[in-house]
Length: 172
Image (cartoon, rainbow, N blue to C red; front, side, top):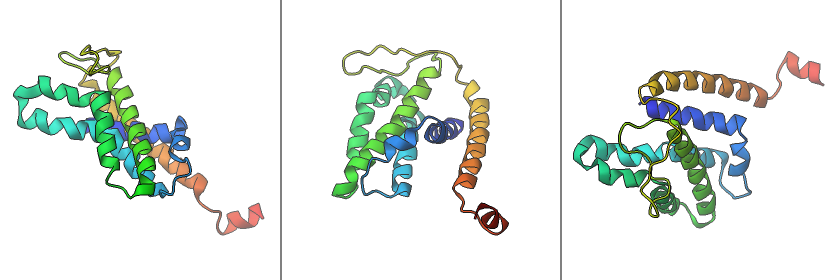
């Protein structure tokens, strides 16, 4: 749970602070809600794909690691985007891919005791990481990121809210 929370919080911060929202808005007919839903789904998709296997079949970890590679995640994004109507597929694919990219970058920060993320699969099974955080540190960091994302969300909603009452009279 903290890992999913952390990935969604980072995705929210990426939307607001890193300009990812501009990438998601490229003129396709998809609504903002649909684009955001695909983006947030993409940000947790790698964990949704691999965690059930880790939990139900702990002995198959070596085989499941491949599912966390950008190559396999791109295949998942392609497959999921096909569930959308023709004109929306491109927007769904872009938003899922952007969410997956935020997930992969955050996972690269984490140190691994065993295994890791095969970034160059199928060309290499090397598992490079930046190794800045231990896995157990993600619990506290996820909560802190969620709090920051909540503050950013509240500020963004206040900026978008139309002026009402006395505010409208002052701005007229």
